[in-house]
Image (cartoon, rainbow over all chains, first blue to last red; front, side, top):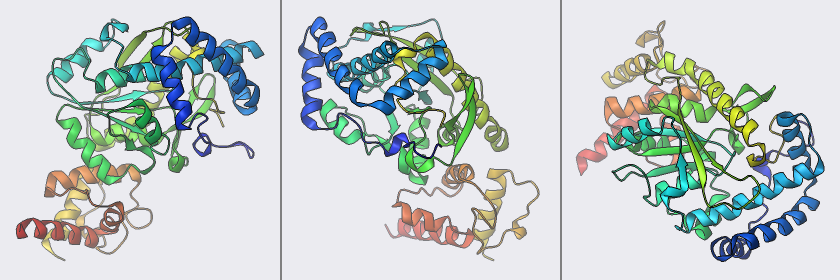
Amino acid sequence: MAKNSVHWADKKEVAVLSWQLRFTSFVACHFPVFLKNTLAMAITAFYFATMKKEREASKDFLKKCRGKASLLDSYKHFLSFSLSLMEKFYCWSGVPAISQIETQQDDMDELCKRLEDGEGCLMICSHLGNIEYLWSSAALGKTHVKRKFEIYPIADTAITPKQNNVLNRNTKTINANSIGIEEIALLSEKLATGNVAIVAGDRVSANTRNRTIPVEFLGKDASFPMGVFALACALKVPVYFVFALREKDLGFSSGCKMHIHKANCSMHGSYLERKRQIPNLAKEFAKFLEYYCLKHPMQWYNFYDFWA
Amino acid sequence: MSDLNIKIKEMIIKALELEDIAPADIDDCAPLFGEGLGLDSIDALELVIAIKEEFGVSFVQNSAETRKAFASVNALAEYINSVKKGENCG
């Protein structure tokens, strides 16, 4: 990591005050679309002007995707992020119907069948797009699966409690910063009885920054969190890479496209075979992430130097 | 060496496929991770699940206790014994 750069995990979230979150919530749920968009543009302009480091990170990322990036492109990138925050609230309000999530001809059917048969899995998501569409609909019981299952998100809980509170997320988050033996035992039990764990594969958490896997991503080696992929090895369950992407990058739209890809790396073999698959699984994830980044670079919400 | 210690060592060897190591090669007091047996964090995850399968013991206690239990074979045996004993008492 460069000397002066700050690890994302050490940064404070921008909108953390309760009233800010509550205001956003109100706007997201009750304002008409054109007003949401206008308000998002104005608020974005403020943050865009004040957040230099994030502007640079955006520029660097967009350059890697498209070869060039103007200041306007970065502003659009910021705007897309603002819209995704509003969308979060919209998702957890319980308003969206399952029909607003457009599924594809991918591994969706296979996944549904698996869950219907009472078997669990590990989902690896990312900070590309808005996974809350998927998470909230699963947590609120709106799924294509004719059986109730629980979803266990693994995330940095230093950030999420306040968000959980305001968003009314009814899920119990497992802290990614202190995931240990007890949590593994719990997850192993829950996944064996047909539940789902979900974790982002593109963030290295605060206390695991030394345990990373270097994987080529958009032309340069980046650090991916080893723990996420090691978890799959320990849990011995199939892994699905999931992406929920907004149709319009730059407008509040009430829906998303959901992509589900079952990982080729099998976590069924002997221990040593599974352990050897860990870096391969990370590579496989990075390939999918890259593919969708190139399609929707504006929906990349890691505003820090990902390659640091 | 108690029977439980031997069972634990056999379980470690089997779960982690440590082909060149015999139960007698593992020191009862030596640390399992880092120096000593040289296991890593990925091995730890595997062990937790193996212990649950083999001995029916989970690690739902606070993490300091868990960390203590994983210090050595002796510590693991002690932990498994104490959990079993607790179950028998009611």
